[in-house]
Length: 258
DNA sequence: ATGGTAGAGTGTCTA
Image (cartoon, rainbow, N blue to C red; front, side, top):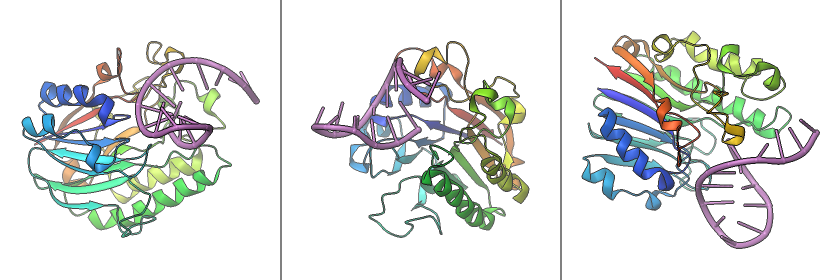
């Protein structure tokens, strides 16, 4: 089974690329972030024609997550227990959606950006991650994968210019400790061993031709529970998806399961 | 420190 994750930065403006990506890589389950669409705005026809089911959670202009699956899509849950706003159908949150696809529990996650270190959104980000970690410990014994845009660069080598980011979010010790906490609990970054750095990124800002100069960050990850991680036979980052006109600012991550 | 680009939707906000 082939899993993928992709911050598409608008599903509506990226639908042609998404459909082509699914076909080109023969993807079974694709987790999307930043769909920037309400559920009824998701362009379904082409995806359904390709044999996929779609579960989405979108409530505003900048969040939005979805799971696209052709191996079943069951037990869909918007948000996780303990998440701010969880259980409230009107909550202005659409940063997490879970579903069981082909026997694997997959969570598509759009971790809060945090904005600036002195911004309340930074505190919110750390709190959100702590609550996710608490919930995720209950899923460790299952075939679980936590995928998406973590908005954290865990290592210095994951940032094109650490000096430029030294006082910014995404690299602070508290954010990195939050990410490391998942690894300490037993989750495994199933991508990195197959895509070793340095200078291997998943995100390049639209500004200043950052992609063309490979000035990016590695902030998108697939973290597998121990049993899931043991099934991973390979992984890749499709950086070609960041190239050319009409690209998202993120590249997809892919993992293969035995 | 600032500004550069892209996408949501028409005013700016978000990243």
